[in-house]
Amino acid sequence: MNDSSWGAPPSAGYSPGHWGPPDQGAAPAGPAYDEHGAQHTRPVPIVPEPDVPDAGRDAEDRDHRDDRDRGAARWSGPLFRDEMPQEPMPTPPPPAASEPPESPQPSQPPQKKRAGRDLRAAIGVGVGLGAVIIASLFVVKAVFVGVIAVAVVVGLWELTSRLDERKGIKAPLVPLAVGGAAMVVAGYVRGAEGAWVAMALTALAVLVWRMTEPPEGYLKDVTAGLFAAFYVPFLATFVAMMLTADDGPQRVFTFLLLTVVSDTGAYAIGWRFGKHKLAPRISPGKTREGLVGAVTFGMAAGVLCMPLLIDGGTWWQGVLLGLAVAVSATLGDLGESMIKRDLGIKDMGTLLPGHGGIMDRLDSLLPTAPVVWLLFVVFVGSG
Image (cartoon, rainbow, N blue to C red; front, side, top):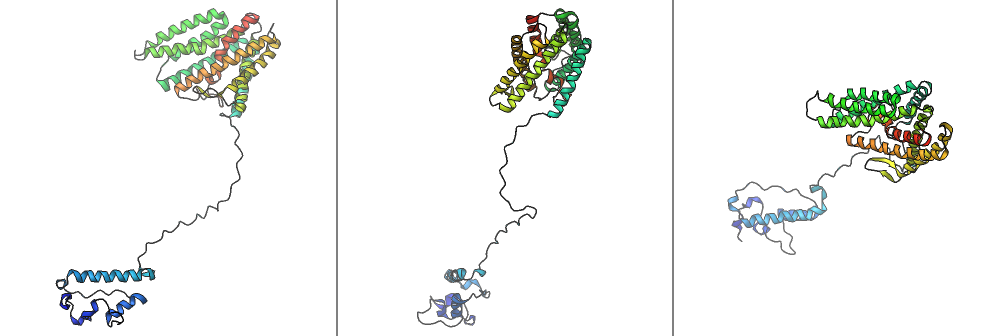
């Protein structure tokens, strides 16, 4: 390699031998010595070379200078950390001033079961309804018949309103309300024969009334109307027929008391001990233990009520009556739960705080009424 190949003038301060490897034992002098010595002592900033034409430099010159720069970086890098570019370290977020340091929390006691409704409101409304029913029942029978008719009309309004809102089924309310009230009165005045005649006339009125509307949906509307007429006013008519006996108020009171006691026993035992679901697809809250409680409480109430309140009643009749009431009330509750689940609602209405609507209180009473009426007729006669 000759000197002219590097293209550097003598005035640049470099001698031809300085670019080669240094002799062993001879310290090179001049700028090259200072530069290489600095690699082992202290960092020396690299001064850029003066601009010279690149025409006289070949690839070997550039490779040699690159090797020298990498060597300097290699020697100085680990020893002088200040010269190496370093990425900024992430700064941890300052602790929130408002949050005190965490301290071990004491273990929480297990939560007690809570009722799904406002018990204070439910008890208050229940006591108020009971007072109205008892006052009308034992003072004037006709007033209690009016109470039944009002409950029937409100229940029909709730049922038809939910059918229209959730399913678009327009069961005619006017003939149902008029026919339902007439059905209750006819059952009280003319007995079972009058109730059946009023039921037939109400069904005919529903069919005719719906003809005033367009034919689309006629079949489903009248079917829902006939179902509502049977489910609410016709079943409620059996309560009015109980009232016609000489001890009618006592029979109705026994019917109401056994149904309420049965529901209370199912709620109390199921809430405290319930573990096995009775019908989870229909009503997830009901349990087999609750059914046992309903039967037990119902039979106990029947044993007390039949001899004390019903003329000619015996304790074993009370056992059978309480059992029948517990079963029919549970089936009635499940039946309305099936309807509400199909409609996608929790309650039929909001008229009674803590209870829902009128239909939410009639669900167990309506199917139980014909069962109790029939057992009274079998046990002690129609009176």
